[in-house]
Structures are given as structure tokens and as C-alpha cells.
Length: 107
Image (tube, rainbow, N blue to C red; front, top):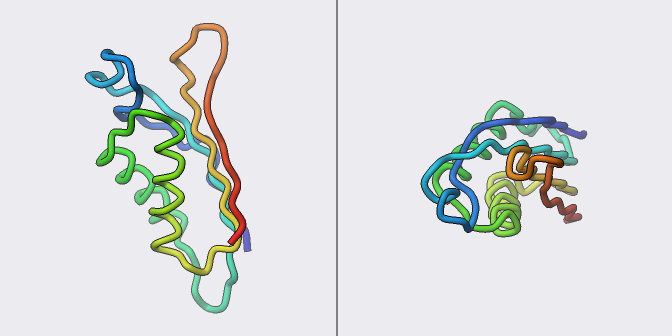
């Protein structure tokens, strides 16, 4: 089975610059989860809550750190995952483009 979470958008503290440490900024997250379904399903609504709560609590400095932290958090709750893709975008940090990071893991 595959779960797709597209354009999950919310504000959180993330970044290195002084203004990024004091004012929440908008981020957008895409997640793809492949998992083995054997009467154990992954609740996508709970997955969204997990992602938001994790990023609100940690207030990462780097997008890369946030990406790796999310990977660990998601996999620790769902060991039946076989593939995980996460992309985190900062749509407002530069005026002429959207920037972000992504990674794909196979378990």
C-alpha cells in the first residue's frame, strides 16, 4: 500500500537566521509511505498529526535535521514501512523560488 500526503502546509520555527528563530514560517511537506498491509493500516490523519507535532516540538535549525528527525519519528511508530519519501519546502524564504530538501529511504 502507498500513502500520499501532498502539500501539508503549516507554520513552525525552523531555520538558522535570527528572524527564523523567533517567528514561525510557513513550510510545505510532501510524504510518500509504502508499507506492508496485513490488517495493520497506517492512519494518514494520525501521520499528519505526528509530523506537525514533531516539527512544532523540535524547532530545528536545518531542514536536513528536520528531514532526518521526521524519518526517525515516523519509522519508530510504523515499523511496517518499506519506503519513506519526505520533502520539506520553505515557500516564502526567497522571493523568486521555493527551496527545500528531500530524501527517500528503503527499509
